[in-house]
Structures are given as C-alpha cells and as structure tokens.
Length: 207
Image: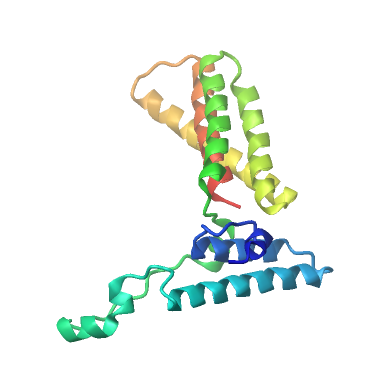
C-alpha cells in the first residue's frame, strides 16, 4: 500500500475502514476554505485507500468471512427463513457532529489528568475549587486539540462545569437525606469530584 495516503489522513496501514472514514470527515471539517488543494489531497488519499483495499479484497489478501465470500454455497446448503430487519436507530445529525469515537490514547491521557485532579480535590483539604479550575482548563485543551475550535471547546467546558456542579449538588442533597453529616470542605470535595468526572466524559467523548 502507498503509505503516503495514510499519512495524509494521519493514519497507518493497520487502521480500520471506520477509522479511515472518521479521519477523512474530521480533516475535511478542519480544511481552510481558501485552500482547495488541501481538500483535494484528502479526498484523493481517501479514494486511493478505498481502491487499494477493494483490490486486495478481490485478490483475497484481506480476510472476509465465509458467509460473505461464499454466499452462493451457503444459500445452497442452508435454507434460511427470510426475515425483515428493522434499520438500527441512528442519532440525529447534530448529535453525531458532537460525539467522538476516541482512540485509546485519546482516553488514556485525559483519564490520567482528571484522575489526578479528582484525587487532589478529595485528599487535599481546601483544594476543590483549584482542582476544578484546572479541570476546566484541561477540558478546553483536550477538546481544542481535536477540532481546533477554541470557542466551541470553551462552551463545552463551561456547559460541562455547570452540569457537573448541578449533579454534585444533587448528590449532596441525596447524601443529606440519608443523614450523612459532611463538613463544608468535604461537601465541596464531593461536588468537585463529580464535576471533574463529568468534565472527563466531555473531554473524551465529545468534540
């Protein structure tokens, strides 16, 4: 395979077809409208990869399940009652634009950072607000690294902070109903940890 086509999409030859599609869509969204050559290069690399994989599949170099390669034999040997399958529900378009399919590294590093901030908030008395501030900054950083849209990242981080604090406040009220006495510092720590956890979700699975 031509490695330069994969490098154009920021991938390698071991990337799955789904990863190729996601990379193409993401790079096209990031393209500068004043630079049509960049868009053409992305489309050309994507088309070349598709054609190469189609050729390899026809030559038998890419393994395909028997039920697909030998569909005729399967039809002869097995009588299958036809079934009508309903299409799988798809999320609305605006939600697909927000959701991300992160790689292992995209989840690993935010997890390390937010876990450290949650531990700081829980074990260091009076550090809840500081840890939460760092968590917001980390959320903006990780989101902006994906799409290079600072204000979108800022809005997601602010929304995540608001929802996280509301969830933490709700958790405190539920704890109070169970007659658990928490001092103000520990209440702040609980709210902070829950908000930091929600910000980790935002930074890892949104874009």
